Amino acid sequence: MDKDTTRVQGDRRARLLAMGDALQAAAAGADWDKLGEHARALGPALQALAARGPWNAAERLVLVRLRSQHDDAAAAAAAAARELATRLETMRANKEGWLAYAMHNDIEEGASQE
Image (cartoon, rainbow, N blue to C red; front, side):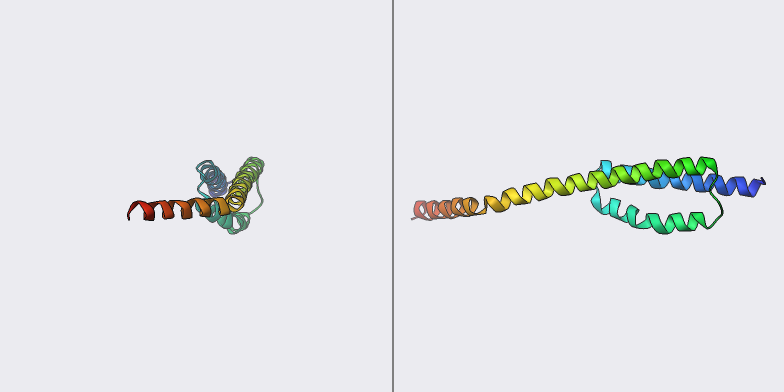
């Protein structure tokens, strides 16, 4: 293996590690916009890296790690989406009560200003 091949493989490994860490950080920070950006960039980046030649054993291990980080990030996004859906459903269910409360407060404020 020549020096250039070793450097390219090291660069690929570092890039894979960085992509996984970026997914993990965005999910941990609940930065869903950033997570989406990283997830959308993943496919093209992996294709470009794969075009450089076959993956070596160390790179395949990092690919497994990246897959796990991607799965974990997707699970975090799905959990946040479920939590948001539950919260929105609660808001919808209580909408009439909130409107009545708001109208009652408006009527009381109007009566107290007379």
